[in-house]
Length: 226
Image (cartoon, rainbow, N blue to C red; front, side):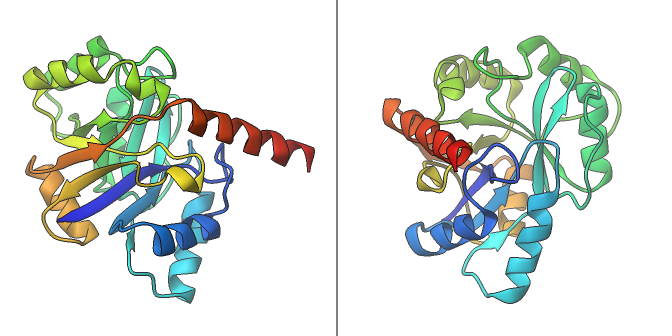
């Protein structure tokens, strides 16, 4: 059974750890098979990740990605090769992701604790007749407060939507990488992609208490002082 955490953030954006530190942590302290750093609206981490993969053989596979800011909330773009324009309507962003052959995943859906795509917008895209306007999956486990407060509603709504299940740690520091993961048959990035498209993924993880949020706060504070 493969394990993937494809919702991570580095210090290129609002995370606290370098791409290199995240790679070493995944290599030495997790059993993940596939990861992606999905910084908000930028592609800097992808360049650094590609360089690291050329320099060293890791036991896990890396997928290029980003967490895009749309006009109605954040949207994960996986398996993309170049940046996508920000602050577009959700449907337009979804279409641009698919034009690159990527996957469009709804992170922390319907959450008031962060900038999230709401129920009405999700259903609007699902009603679209455009062949590229569809979601590939929905984050049903996100360990943060943003995900914790809505997880029951998301799972209930997805009984109707029937989107592929996805879980990501939304990790902004390396110590929480893998706290939520998507499970799939196989081990490779292509196996993950196939499982998601066929709606055969499973999810696993736990929700964070106070300590991880407190630790992240102090790490950010320490970086500002240094």
